[in-house]
Structure formats: structure tokens, C-alpha cells
Length: 106
Image 1 (cartoon, rainbow, N blue to C red):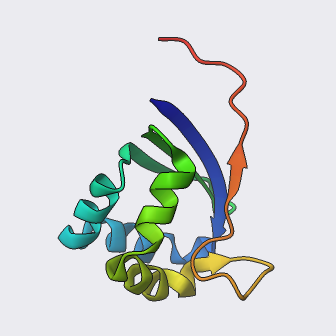
Image 2: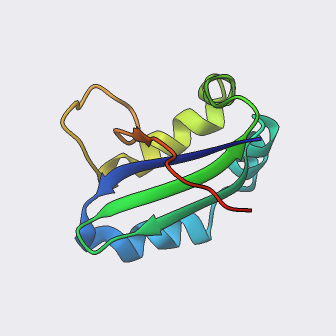
């Protein structure tokens, strides 16, 4: 299992709304995430709007490609678009930076 950490940004003033959207995550999206091979998925917020995301998957690229092919993911990304801060406006969804793992202790 591979651990994947990433960061992206939202508009900090929309944090409560962003959290509410995730508290009410669509069941079909949660299923699509699991079906793509993603587990132990968490998102953390920093006051400046930076979000840290953590997930586990056997193959990150394969999981992201499978999820990207789903209609529910496309609808979710469009639904969430108003929250994201990004330079490249052509990207649907957040502008994600994958982080390099430096240390892990079981």
C-alpha cells in the first residue's frame, strides 16, 4: 500500500461550506473512491486555506485515472470548483501538489 500526501488550496472564507459539502459527501462518490482503490482518505485544513490530503492506494496514478473516468467524480469536481484557489483555471478540480514522503513510522 502506498501512502500519498498532497496539498491544494481553497478560499479560507469558504471553509465551513467546504466542510459541510464533505460532511454530506455523495454516497456514489464515496463508492467510486473506494472502487478506484483509495482508502484511509483524510483532508486537513490550515487557516490560510491550504489543505493537506492523505490517502492510501496500491497505485496512485491508476486510482486517479479510474476515478477521473467516472461521471460522479466529474460532477463532484464541478460542484466543488467555487472553493479552489489555483493558477491554472483550465483544471477541473483542485490544483494538487503531491508531497514527497520523508519519514514514516508504523
